[in-house]
Image (cartoon, rainbow, N blue to C red; front, side):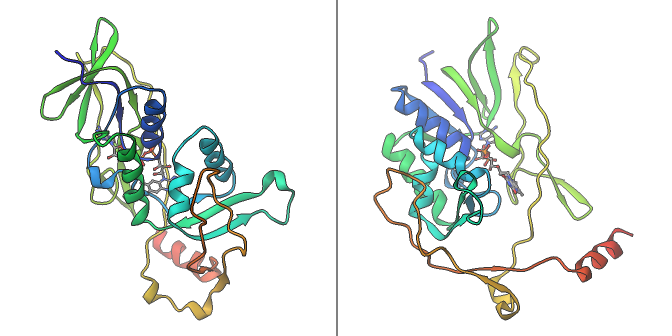
Length: 257
Ligand SMILES: Cc1cc2nc3c(=O)[nH]c(=O)nc-3n(C[C@H](O)[C@H](O)[C@H](O)COP(=O)(O)OP(=O)(O)OC[C@H]3O[C@@H](n4cnc5c(N)ncnc54)[C@H](O)[C@@H]3O)c2cc1C
């Protein structure tokens, strides 16, 4: 069988995008296999890049040649340097970015490296031979051979979604969960642990009375995440802050009973 590629990356979230781009920069042929090509770069959680502690990580990824900062700079809607009242060591850049544009830009940047880099596929198994990873097996049964496989399947692996008191299986909203086995079964022990995360409900802006909220404008000076960005990001929206009140606590208490 002809080798499919040098490196297979499973999953097109933040981790997979950086892994694929890094492998490409190292001169390797890489294929990023993800459930849906149009969802590569989809922001699962809030569309914020950076923030406390995470802002430094985005900068470090950028220093290593990564894509996250460049993508964020192209679709920034609102920028703030958090912790500005404290010392510069803990200043934390945070951008609210366009949820619809981020994946489009991410996919474009990957295809600029190699037009064939993104492949739509559901990986079901890691293919093992003689105690070594040989490649992957897809849900349609086909086998793809590679020198190495990088797993960046994110929150999709055995994903369970909790909505109120209900539990359903899922990757993200409207997307299927995945499970990775090995072929032959049991030949590799993958260490797994559960990540539990929470996210607020998305509410239509039109349904909110902004007059009751605290305005949070972006900073006058917008600092790009990437030292390589050619465009200067600008603030185009305001953010608004609201706080949990005693009424909220009592409402939650009533629901718990
Ligand atoms: C509802 C929700 C709320 C969250 N809240 C936060 C938060 O507040 N703060 C925070 O830091 N993080 C939060 N997260 C986690 C956030 O999603 C991760 O930090 C981030 O997305 C991880 O990136 P990733 O690249 O590891 O994986 P993901 O973004 O999850 O991407 C995984 C990719 O792998 C693909 N994939 C998975 N399995 C396979 C397979 N077998 N074959 C092919 N493709 C596959 C998927 O299609 C997807 O493209 C939240 C996630 C969810 C779902």
